[in-house]
Amino acid sequence: MATRLTFHGGAGTVTGSNFLLDTGGTKILVDCGFFQGAMDGEEAKNKEKFPYNPKEVEALFITHAHLDHTGRIPLLVREGFRGTIYSTAPTKDLAELILRDGIDVHGREEGGRDGFYTHADVDRALSLWRAIPYHEEVVLGGGVTAELKNTGHILGSAMVECMRGGKTIVFTGDLGNTPDPILPDAEPLTRADYLVMEAVYGDRPHEDKETRREKLEDIIEEAVRAKGVLLIPAFSIERTQEMLFEIKTMVDERRIPHLPVFLDSPLAIRATGVYQKYRGFLKKSVGEGDAIFSFPGLTQTLTRDESSRIEKTPNPKIIIAGSGMSNGGRIVFHEKKYLADPTTILFLVGYQAPGTTGRALEEGAREVDILGSRVRVRAQVKKVSGYSSHADMEGLLQFAVGVADTVKTVFVINSEPKTGAFFAQRLRDYVGIRAEAPQEGDSVELEF
Image 1 (tube, rainbow, N blue to C red):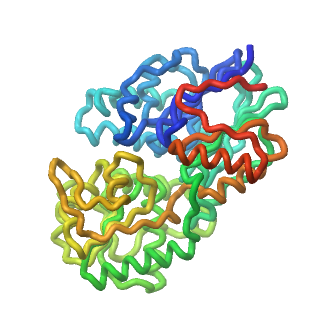
Image 2: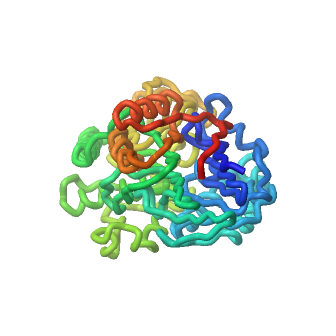
Image 3: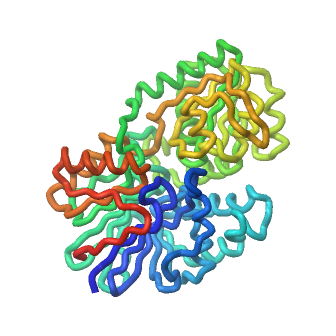
């Protein structure tokens, strides 16, 4: 039987990563993520049954902990998956935080995300989970072996390299925006027969690292002069820690005035603890300090009462809160209060999915619906893509060049349709690689 690769999520869309590799001797999944965004009923897909039998899957490899790569794992287990889940140790710890937060945010033990899963389902998933280091060989059925390699995207992120009979298939997961201030660079790839490659930013560049740091410093100083509020909707994992590290550096070097900074996200606070725990996965120069992410003026508001008291602190101040796309979390309470104030600056530092409030704000909406109210937007909305934890167009191209001499096909995934088509064409034109941008449900036969 020929090997077949099927794209059950993360194809023709950024989120919902779920790829099934069926070699005839074994079935392997890479990622099992949550669909996000309100466009075209994306989140409704999360309620659908898996289009394969989870009981038949031997192994599930998780590239990293973000919700769009992990969010449906408990549902997979509920539907009968009893294989082994593999990831790095930080990914396992961060994924547990994210999965339990998915239940607790909705405030009901039975049902979690609209009836998807419970804490018991998460417990069962964790009992099947095996944490492995980078480059440890995993022996699977049908003569397949696999190992993880660092991608520099978030703490513990990995690409999955599957091998059999001298042939190699690599699933990149999300590739990091290297060089990163706190994470080691992604490992280069020099050989692959097939490459399943993300392209979230496959059609545009980021600002360089110095430019983004200067913009952040300028924005903080602008908020101070206006005696306003700087709101930063930040993803709880990686983006928050990067923001804290950048601000800490500016405080330590006395490059910005002293002002209160609030980290208002229980998930981000707990995730920052995981970063402290796994210092060996950070850049050596970063991991050596005792207080990697703390500095004078920083307050972590774990409880709702602490969060509600933030408004009593006089301006200027900085509030970092989730969610990163303003489609939930504590940031929406602050946006409801402060977006109508022209002294407010909303600073977008990550990808905003179509249909989210963050995307509407990015595109210049002058009114948005927040918590059942219509809110006028008089705040300045600024965006810096250089703080993305994803590689940009040039970074992605350079990564693909490493396998140009060996790769038969690159499958472009985790991108909006126009972006995926653009990047696939760019690979064909500039690198001379055969590239396709599959859609959800597409299935291809591979020589593997």
